[in-house]
Image 1 (cartoon, rainbow, N blue to C red):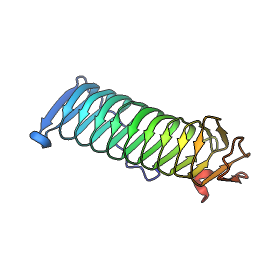
Image 2 (image 1 turned 45 degrees about the horizontal axis):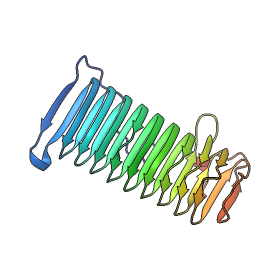
Image 3 (image 1 turned 30 degrees about the vertical axis):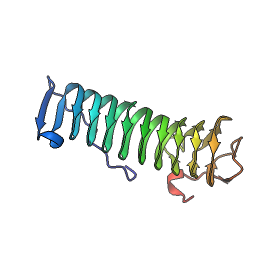
Image 4 (image 1 turned 180 degrees about the horizontal axis):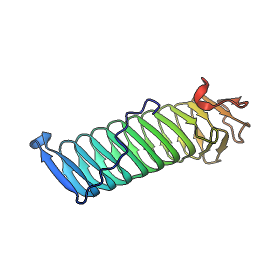
Length: 221
């Protein structure tokens, strides 16, 4: 889905949760699968969880992968994060890259590298020190984005909506049918805004382009 490398979205529906460990020391990793996969972890290696309901908290030294109908996590991830769910909530910290997908995504976290997201409804708060790429239908961006940002509105009912109230410090592009820029939003760098109508509070460094019926994922801004 649009450059994202997603974990499987089909949960493993088994009657009881099972966990397995492998490796030792810095290579020690954990896998968990079940109807409910819930765990507090402190692992030096990788962690992978799948289930209808997935809850993972604690410390993961390397990569964390989660897939389920509902996924909630407050984890410190030393490597990359991959998560896919119908409902996804993450409030932790990620040192590597993050790739997130879901129908409903709620994020309030710190990302020290790049973030890619795809979802029907996305609410993003916190800090992103790298690049941000978002494909979504109903998107609200509240946090601080230190790297370039690209937001592409899409969905079965047009290009969707975007609300901006955060800080965007390295330029970027925003495309949605409706764009609302809150007075609290801050912009630094060069920006392109594409929408059905020019939004109020457009920053001085921005260029506006009317969509004129075009789809965001089919134009080059």
